[in-house]
Image 1 (tube, rainbow, N blue to C red):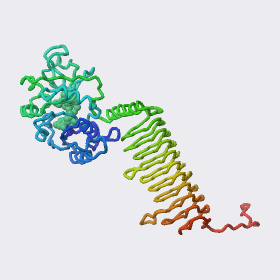
Image 2: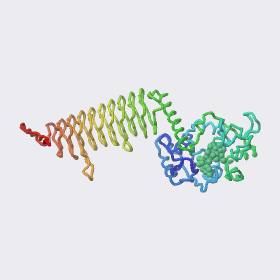
Image 3: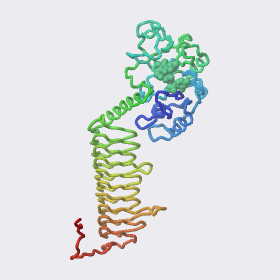
Image 4: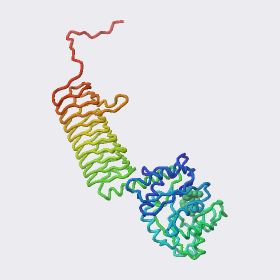
Amino acid sequence: MAAGKGTRMKSTLPKVLHRLGGRALLGHVVDCAAQLSARRAVIVTGHGAIEVEAVCARFQGFPSTFGAKLDIRFARQEPQLGTGHAMQQAVPLLADDGVTLVLSGDVPLTKAATLQALIDECDGQRLALLTLKMAEPTGYGRIVRSGLDASAQVRAIVEHKDATDAQRQITEIYSGIMAVPTVLLRRWLARLDNQNAQREYYLTDIVKFAAADGVAVVAHQITDAAQVAGVNSPVQLAELERVYQSRCAVALMEQGVRLADPSRFDMRGQLTCGQDVEIDVNCVFEGTVSLGSRVRIGANCVIANCTIAAHAVIHPFTHIDGEKLGVTVGEGALVGPFARLRPGVQLGAEVHIGNFVEVKNSTLGKGAKANHLAYLGDATVGERVNFGAGSITANYDGANKHRTVIGDDVQIGSNCVLVAPITIGAGGTVGGGSTLGKSTEPGGLHVARAKQVSLPNWKRAVKKAS
Ligand code: UD1
Ligand code: CA
């Protein structure tokens, strides 16, 4: 269910599209359904339906975590007349021979194992409710049983606004998540009315129908409140973000990754790590990132969509984003501090990229170095090349991009401009301060700058006395 408005977010973005761990809230819920190998996911949309549906359509092909086989359908609910009404829109798209798992698009942290246990309790024949004891249950639907002890039969769910004072004392609440045989759900939904305090069609009313029809109702009670916590406000979103980040950090540390401080670590995608990886404080990982064995990431790095081979060191304040083309950093390479690697960069083994160096869509051979204040764009750089401080490839003529090819063992001095398209032959040396517009043969010294003039008797101007 994802049709609700989310007024308290005070945002124009539909609530279920707000991001947690870099991904839409609804994405987490759909991911969970995919992990359960659901046959079909029906998403009930209403508020911001067009935007929500457009984002969900992209989940179909989301790498690895989203099962590509999950068949996603949409049911529009306009207007929104309650959770029962929402489910009435969805059931025509569900097959009678299955079990329907009801989830909320704004509850992102439910674990697949918890839902599997709920489905097992349902067992294709019972109504299984996910419940929780809460010290402060105000606002939630209460689980009403036939007696006082915990084993007493579940008779109904009573919404807070409809509950008597005695019922409001009940601390066991309905989480909003249930598993129900679809054929029974369809039958019960047809019997709903809106004769209640909110004039809504309550999905929770099906519990009393189940009890009346002699269908067993089971309450599957959990203790981890984060798994059923919904997002209604920016404060709650930030709280759940911390829970999510701490889960990710713990999972990595259990694999042996050493995080300098798990509370200063942010994962907004998927990170795979080899053995003995070390990550200093305040690093953000986005998209798909892979770190080889013994990789070290310094403090304050933002690293997205890249593969870093074993023994490479990324020094502090480095920004890497491979976007769609990706970035690869070779074995034992040193990058940063203050380096920027953009899409399409492939650094060979033992390459050094130093401070204030930007590299885009370029390949650097083994042992090549650009240690200070440089720009390499659309370049193919050979092995052992040394690219001097302040030098750049002028890859853009104002209309088109051109390639620079630098052969093996070339030495580019400081403050050079290589005007592409250009090839610097292997083993050549380019004198500092040169602007080269023509390709060079292998070897030799290539200098293109004004000759030095020295005037030994020149007098500097002196200030006039006033
Ligand atoms: C619901 C339950 C309540 C439970 C609580 C847990 C009902 C009647 N009550 O309460 O017992 O304790 O969840 O959080 O089900 N939605 C729609 N269309 C609608 C109304 C809601 O799609 O017409 C969606 C919302 O976007 C949300 C979910 O259903 O994702 C739950 O709606 P919400 O309004 O939060 O449920 P409550 O009434 O608070
Ligand atoms: Ca709610």
